[in-house]
Image (cartoon, rainbow, N blue to C red; front, side, top):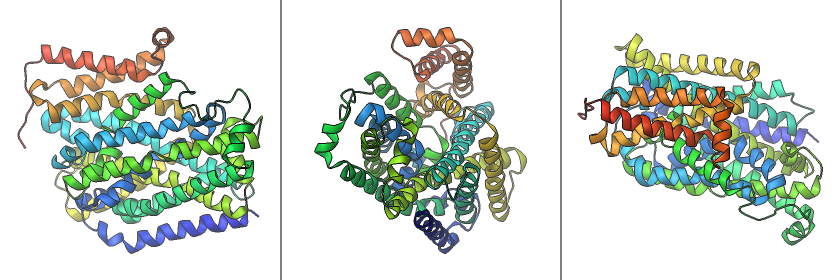
Length: 470
């Protein structure tokens, strides 16, 4: 019966490649055309690009895993993502589009210094490459868990890589955006169908609540702990302002209005998916008691009909592919714009930019694949990397909204001190214990403190105002 889900997944892959091939001409040109879609994305492409980036394995399988024990409250993870999207849409997306830059490190050199750009691109690349590597791992886990007779973990990773790397190589950012329209439809169709069928198998929603173990929190929205929920909101509302693959969507929008509307619409689409995935995890607590929580969603899906399992599998895998495509484009933009064009070949012509951009995508994909198969602890590294966005967010927002208090040393020193704060967090367990004792267990709180103190200190010590010319 594995052949039915396999046929569905293969049909989905073919559909993505057909769309990519038909729209490849949209990306013809240099770096801006290929990696920023010619700065011409309408809001109805901006929204699915953002949604696809937000909804990955953590938003579906990870949420269901937590919901197996913590109930519906696990869905707050995606609500935090949605809150971040709303914030960017309301206060920053329009301003980002008006900047006419390709990367945040480019913005840092424009207003601060070359060293600010160099430090900025190093941190961004580390973060982007680690997150991209995680997508190979997630894709391999999804395919091998739900089709164990067809895929091993390694072959699942390879198929995942071929899918999103091929789409990105052929069509660039336009392909990532247009295929994400299909991805988002498949994601919602799969997860909704899975949740409805899982609840129906239990006997309906009323029976679901009645049959839960007495200690299970069910639909208690605060069961996972408000401290963790607040930490999620702080992390995501920080991250969305300063991760290259996210802000690049604003840079690539057709105009400031498209950027704003796209982020707000994207937040609306992102919001429900976590709570829907959580319902599958809750159903698994009844259907599959005593399993490892990580298996909550795969076990539940496998217990459904082969056709339903195939649709859900395609949806889960679509979530992974959609995230990876945007991440890969963001990483390539950093390499081409902030390293090659800035320091190696500043006079590169449009045809050369296109070639270098595609080579960068290919090299980065190979590097991240090797990283995925050889490095352990990626999730832990991902958590650490996301906390680094505190410094990027602080410097970026201050530059845009309060340039009068910004000084030439802010970009370099705020980023470096945030990196140092992460090292301290890792090296000294006493520091982690102290913050746990004061109910701030997540490193993002420590990094925000360090970033704010550094910013204030530089303001007092450095009298050189930033460049504010266009």
